[in-house]
Structures are given as C-alpha cells and as structure tokens.
Amino acid sequence: MTETLKQTPLHARHVAAGARIVPFGGWDMPVQYAGIVEEHRAVRANSGVFDVSHMGEFWLEGPHVLEELNALLCNDPRRLVDGQALYSPMCNDRGGIVDDLLLYRFAADRFLLVVNASRREADLAWVKTHLARSSVRDASSEIALIAVQGPRAPEIVQSLTTAGLSTIGYYHFLPNAEVAGVRAIVSRTGYTGEDGFELYVDWNEAGKLWDALRGKEVPPAGLGARDTLRLEAGYLLYGNDMDESTSPIEAGLAWTVKLEDRTFVGSEVVRQHKERGVTRVLAGFALRERAIARHGAALLKDGAPAGVVTSGTFAPSIEKSVGLGYVPPALAAPGTLIAADVRGRSIEAEIVKLPFYRRTRRTKL
Amino acid sequence: MYPQDLKYSQEHEWAKLEDGLVRVGITKFAADKLSDIVYVELPKVGAELRFMQPFGVVESVKAASDLCAPISGTVVAVNEPLTQAPEGISADPHGAAWMIVVKPSALGELDQLMDASAYSKFIGEG
Image 1 (cartoon, rainbow over the protein chains, first blue to last red):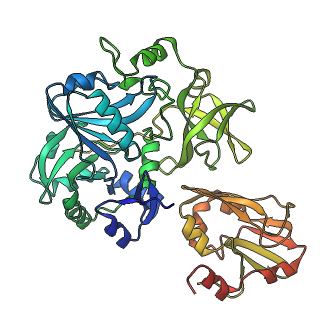
Image 2 (image 1 turned 45 degrees about the horizontal axis):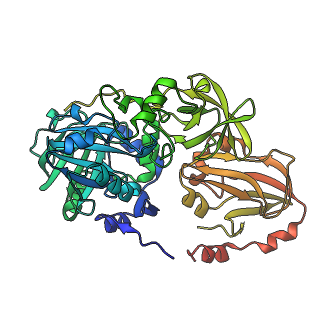
C-alpha cells in the first residue's frame, strides 16, 4: 500500500528549483536544494526561506478558551497579551508529551495553536477533548507557513511591507499585516537560532509571497538545514527528542512548565518529576571525532550502556559532531566524559551545555 | 564524466589498475547523491578486503553509507588527508579523493565490474 503524501502549495516551485523531495510526517517535503551545509551557512550568515506549510494550525475560540487552555498546557497561557506567542508542551494524563506547540493570542477569546504535522490528528482529538466548551477548528489546509530566518531576514521582510517590523519583539506578532501584497500573520519566531519571522498566509497566496522573497535573493532552505540549525540552537524535535513516554522535565523543558497555583493535564506526574527528580534527562554531547551518533545509538559510560541518542548531526557552525540524548542525571553535568556507540565503535564524547550554538550578533531593525 | 580507465561497481565505487595495484574511491554519482560528506572511516594499511564486502564508511549529514570493496586484497595505502577533510570528496571523487590502494589477490574480479559506459547507463546518465 502506498501512502498518498500531501503536498504544500509550493511543491511545484521546490521541484522546479531542483529540491530533493522526501516524505516527512505524511508530506512530500524539500529536504535540500543546494545542499544542507550550504543552506545552513546561508541562514547563519545571511538568510534563508523555508516552506513549513506542513505544520498544523487550529483556531480556538470562545469565552472559556483561556480557562480551558490553562487546564491543558504545561506553560501558562494567562501570561500572554494580545499579539504575543507562547511555546508549550502539551501532556497526556501520565505527564508524557503529546506534542510541543506554539500558542498565539489574538484576543482573550481567540487563539491560534500551531502543532507538528506528524501530530496534527492526535493533537486535534486531544485538544477537542479538553476544550469541550470552546470552538476548535482545524485550519491546517488553509494556512501556509513560510519562515524567513537569518541576520538579514528582518530587513528583507521589511522591504516587502509597510508594517513596522521593528516594534515586533521576540515571540510577538502582528495579526494582520500585508507582506508582498499578501495578508499575513507576521511572527517573530523561528526554529534556527537566528533572528527572523514566520509568516502565516492563505494557502493560495503562499506562492506569491515565496516568489517575492526569492526575488529578494533569499535562498531556499530545506528540512535538512532546518534540522541542523535547530539542533545547534538546542531546540528539540518531537518524535526524536521527546514523545508520549517522556515528560517535559526529563526533556529539559522545565522552563516551559508553570506549576505554581495551577494544575494542567499531566501536572501531577510533572510536579513529581520536578520535585523528586527523574532517572533520565536530555543532555547535549559533542563527539571527539567527526562520526555522527544518530537517533537510537547507545551512550556508554565506562563501556556499559548508560543512555540513548535522540538526535545527532555534524554541526556546521561549530564544526563538531554533536547530539542530544537521555542519560542519568549523574552523567548530565557539562564536562562529563561518556562515549557513543557508532556502528560498534566506542567514540569519546563530552557532555556540553546547551545550546551548542548561540548567535552573537544582534540584528537591528 | 566517467573516466574510461576506471571500472565501476553497482555500489558506486571505482577501481583503477595501476602497475598491478588497484586504487579505489567512490564515484561522482555517489558523492553527489550523499552530499555534505562530513566523515570518512577507512581501513588501516595491512587490512584484508573481500570482494563486495564493506571496508569503510562515508558519513553525510543525513546518513551513513558502507563502502564496498570492488576488489579483494590487502590495503597498501590509505588517503589519510581525505579523512581530515572529507568535505573535499565531491570536488574530485575520481582523482584526489581516492580512498585506498589495494594489492589485489584476485585481479579477475575487475572483470565483474562495469566499464564507464555501462556504469553511466546503470545510473541513468548514459
């Protein structure tokens, strides 16, 4: 049986640009155009544009929506003001992560939830269960998402709009701007560790915006570069670094968990993990060689299995092979020497502080 | 594109007979297909290779791939600089980016490999 893969509104443009297309989360997605490392470096040094239209979007509305979100999400949605976004895990009853998502507040009774493509159906069911008194509408097939990232991204997007982008702070957004003649939600967020914007537009208008950005000589970047960029920046990938069996505390997302004066789905277990500790935590490591320890590889201490790799790559910006993996807390301190089993060979590794890469330049706009 | 004096395997290695020794590398097709090569693991001088068995690994950002020996024999030279700068493979895969030199134990195995025109057809470029 062949699974029919969905295509984004930009699919034909990717094919024409010579992209290598791979299946990802039920979608035909461009993994690379010029090459992963070249695209990665372009985003770090200059800019790149990503088609991430496979992401899911749900509109949440009604007088009880804030109260119901507060009882569902690990992070506290009551902290948001209109025009602000929040990153949060969403847990199951056992404190395991159902998905990690972005919540945008348009009004006290109107929010947009942005979820991972591979989790859209599971998320929709879970959100509907817990937002029983609110309206939940899946708009994933109507909303395309284009990310423009890199130190030059702000000036490039600014050149296509009369809206003042300099007033948009990190994790804030304009709900209704016009970019290249296309109505867009302009969000100062990203998954690369660089400054930039994520532009939510009508499915049928995505091509127009994409062409305008390409016209500004922003090179396209694929999911391959997106993965190396996010890993360097210490961002987790759902399904690799966390899933329904890992809690936000184990995954190193304690900063997104607000337990004071509130309860949410899974909060009993999460509270226990936070107060009594956990048996494994996600940690970053750097290998002493350039070989890559990939998802599923064993981590070793003194030759014995001590953990498992969840993500691994060669990090172009620091020119080191790095990764994330679960290890006992006793082995998670930066500087701890462990090893990774790469194809039966034990390669020395050192636990390092996350993120692997942090941008130094502040872009002005 | 594919030099006439090389023989090619279905696993995308090339072999070149030079004064009774066989120089081995990967093809331009393989280098392009892998793209973003970041690591090469090669055998040591003295290692014994068996025809079409793995002798090393090429690792790109996306995946690791086995290198398969296009000839049986003993490794007599290894391109050490290549392991220090593996990103250079795609620049000259049929020349400077050779990987090992083998003293063959069954030279006739080369007859089982493809010539340049057969290999070009095999990868759909002929």
